[in-house]
Every structure is written in C-alpha cells, then in structure tokens.
Image (cartoon, rainbow, N blue to C red; front, side):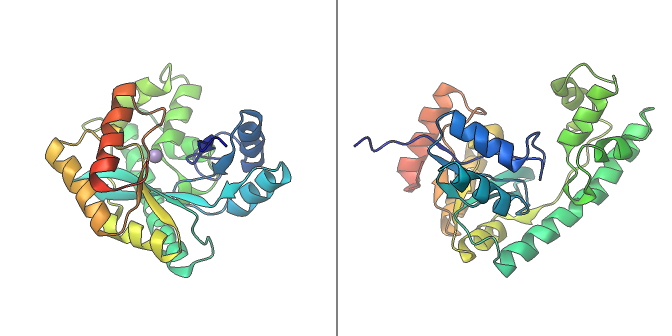
Length: 246
Ligand code: MN
C-alpha cells in the first residue's frame, strides 16, 4: 500500500475570502484527486457543515478546519487548525472576537484610501463578502481591480495595502498561544501555515517555532503554493529539528 496520500488541508471558500462555495470546492478537490480534504476558512467555522456534507457525498474523507490569524513579532501569522470540534465554545468565542476586529480595520483602510481620492472602498469591498465581520484586504483588492483603479491584485497590494501605503492598517490579532489553545482545546491539531511567507529574521522565525511548540503546536505547512522548492526543504528540516509533523 502506498503510504502517501494526496491531501489538501488549506482551502478557502466564499465563507471567508475564497471565490468558490464549499460544495464547489469539495467537487473540485475530488475531481483533482484529493484523498483527504479540509476547508480552512479565515477565523470562521460557518462552512464546516456544508463542506463536510459535500465531501462525504462524493466519498471524500474530510477533516474539520480553520485558519486563525495571530500577531507574532509585529507580523500577522496564520495558524491552521485541523480536526477540531467546530462546536467547541472556547474556539467559537475566540474566533468571534478575532472577527470583530475586521470591520473596524476595514473602515480605517477605507478612510486611508479616501484620503488619496478613492471613495466608497468600504462599501465596494463589502459587496464581495456581505458580512462586515469577514471583510479583508482581498476584498478591497478585488474591488479596486474591478472598479479599474488597478490592473491586478498584486498592484493593489503594492500601491495601496502594504505597510506605508494609504490603505494599510495594522491589525492586532490574538496571541499565538491563544490560537493554539483554542484549536487544541477543541481536540484539533495546530499547524503553522506557510511559514516562508512571513519574512521573519532567522531569530524571529526560530522564536516562532519554539513558542509554537511550547504552546502545544504540532505541525507545519511545508508544501504550499506560497513556498519555493527550496523552502520545502528548509521547512522539512525545521519539522525534523522541532519534532513537528510536515
Ligand atoms: Mn493563510
């Protein structure tokens, strides 16, 4: 028996900032040969029942999932939770608090954009998500592309949404330990998402992995579209060094 399986344990649906409904994602995963799937919407469990039902309907094994935003060393870091009970009260409360910060941040982003002549960005971005608790930079980016302000999403981030640019507003998320506790307390496994994306110094990165392990974190996302081939090797080595699952 081949011990390796095709697993996709990091996906976003329209419940957060993805473009496909949970059912469409399940069908796409199945069609692409995925053998174990998880929907990991940002700070939101609202798609879990739909994703699980759709996966099971096509015979696709499913793990519950979520991706929690935390602040570590002044940077937003994502912690994926897998296999947790989506009805756990502490997890739900923690995610609700995390989401509550999004609308305020989005309004401040829109104020910054208005100051450089881009009016109505909050309302524009909201059209892509519906729920202000889930609004994110991705929704602003889509709005600014579709309304012709920028030619593509990278241009939006470069000109408007990154540090020092008019629409950038830093966000203070939960602490690393809190997010890991919410996930593990709900019976799940906490995973550092796409570590190559954070641009930490080696010291900060070492601190992230060390503290993550101390809090009970168990895994690292090694193979992801956000990583280069060289980073696959780098983070596989981190997994061996820290005793984490890859
Ligand atoms: Mn992420």
